[in-house]
View 1 (cartoon, rainbow, N blue to C red):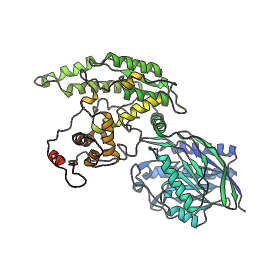
View 2 (view 1 turned 60 degrees about the horizontal axis):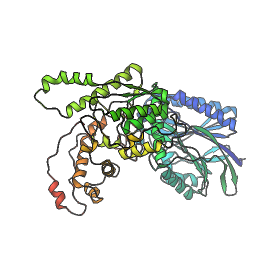
View 3 (view 1 turned 120 degrees about the vertical axis):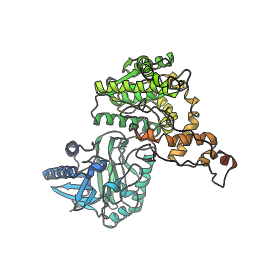
View 4 (view 1 turned 45 degrees about the vertical axis):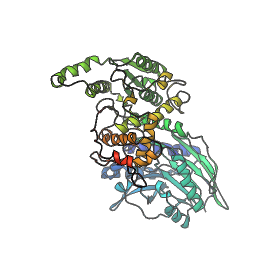
Length: 577
């Protein structure tokens, strides 16, 4: 006889890709916690045993075997009369490899396979998995559970099939990475499936960083009337109990926690901190080192590093040269003191001048130019990498998305490093998040309260200080304009003429578009960094390095004479700034 109450534990946890034994133990511990809470069943995220996304690792037969063996061990443990388990893994059956979700209870294994394999943006599942057949529900102690997996609820076919074959509720495991606005998207999709099926829905998401992706958790439950019955926090591991009752109209979630979830800029900042923390922790670095220049980018990266790891694991180094101002020296020192980190000053005059002396026989007939500027940046990069080699700390690189878009960074110089927490933040967003951090910090952050980025860093004109009196705006449009142009070119793939129609100068847009294309080779060699926007450089945006296409500026409606005149102007080749 079917029961009329059900207690489902939601295990919103942080697996590590490839750590099958560790993920297995994490699942075992979560099941024990679920038993303590009185749960009937505990639910884990998509591909939990493997870690998600494991990419081509899932194609390795030894890895598939390790995941299957872990699942079988966990299944045997369910003969103890404790909670059942719902857990994801790659599963080979004959000649097919599936993204599978398994129900474990009383020693038995029941499997369902993902049908809709996402193959856009950051997802390549059609490369790794075969699609499963349309599923029916699984029977758990007399209750028919629908188990659509992540993308299976983004269209209605799988849920419709489950509803028609008698599912009583939808339990949806997810590996859904964060990007700006994702929370609303999830609710809209889940609400549509609930409305269409008339079934309550559990949306269980993993939490944690994996390379460029950050999974924010923020799991939730919707009752059949689309009311929010449960909301778990974002960016936090926990096992939470939800209590369900069955009435005349089906199952209702009667008791569950409801937390507040960060939104907007707070969510962006928290994602950057979590992404950096997990990259360092999961790769087992003892800490990080970064160049603290007195500018806004290195200051916010230092703040994020301290929030992620604590002051004792962050080492900041000022690397001054003749063009480094006293103002920058003071700002860097003030920032380091506010954050409580180790701070060293290592002048770079000797190595820079040594390089210049070594090159003098070749360069003697040529004037000074960007080459000598890049030597400064490369000397700094070499010193930071030497510190990393000697002490084991990972170098944090600090270029923002505006600079990475147009190549305003020196390859093998300030681009050196293992990870970049602000890689997907435009320059004006860096300023905004810096001001935010001075008045707020994320839950669980290890940095100090209050102002950690000196006000002068927020207000002074940005500069690389590679020559006397240099300012970023000598080479680039104002960042307010540059960021708007780049959003049009990168996120929205707009035509040049469409961006001009929004009020931007034609020549400026053409210049930015050219710089965006010729900097592709640098971005291919850049460190990974946290994905925040809908289209980051890396997994989302894959452009060829050899690429002669340029938007010639044709107006949307016919040809504009001014745009026509611009066609055929000589194009300057790539520069390394």
